[in-house]
Image 1 (cartoon, rainbow, N blue to C red):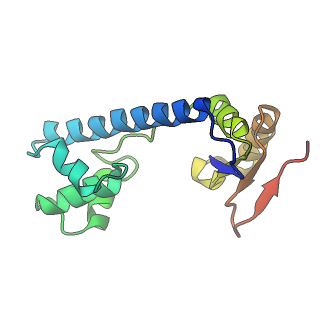
Image 2 (image 1 turned 60 degrees about the vertical axis):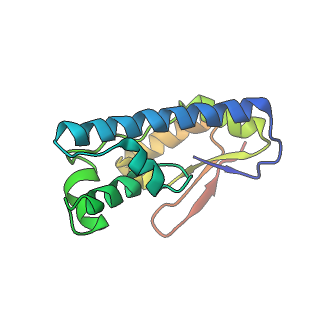
Length: 154
């Protein structure tokens, strides 16, 4: 979800970001637990340090695996451990659609679905879902094949 044209930073917006940060931290801890359960030694603070004060994500876990000598490259870490369906993969956490849309709208922005093809839906199913999501407040989508932008009429 992209929030385009945000200009009103309200308390609700900040609380939504805090909730999203909490969900991401839970996901990260699940990934790290999978690693330790598989016998990889270390401390989660090492992964945090790799993020250099930013949001911890899979690239930092990939670097951790390289540093531990478990893989030779970041790409190998994703191919064998962190990519979808792999041993340490954990689905990305997200706010419920209605909550994300409401937060973007509260901030004065447009709620735009980014990279809809990554949802791995057929074109027919995606078309149906976009119609449902439009009815729930989604303003548009971007990132189709050819980098197309669609804004739904209201």
